[in-house]
Figure 1 (cartoon, rainbow, N blue to C red):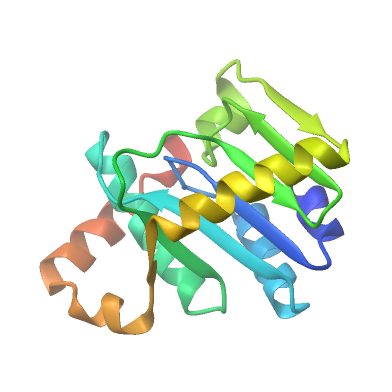
Figure 2: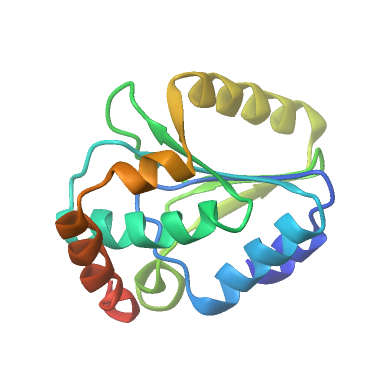
Length: 161
């Protein structure tokens, strides 16, 4: 994925219910944002696996501080795994943004380069962003100290999540 993120020039939109990126993926996302790419990550507001959800919060909070837009889907539970790179490439599959999906589990993702499919995925994601709220620095400061400590504790488990 890091190589794919390195190809992004305009936008890199990611949707995943479990966002626990490795260091190389974090670096690729930060580099894309520094190049001026519109990097957006769409995550569920509601949790179904508490530990992963907490670790995801800690990772996403770090992203916000580096110019990456993080959205929380508020219209039910979000379980899609989709990536959109510019107007050139899109993926839909079962791979979450975590170590287990990338290295251990048997996952599958289909990559599309057909313009019509990319347009459909783009419209779908725009609708999903419209049903979401963006997380900003103010939101991070409003979280309780206990929540932030627990989220950071869950983040320590990232290599095995």
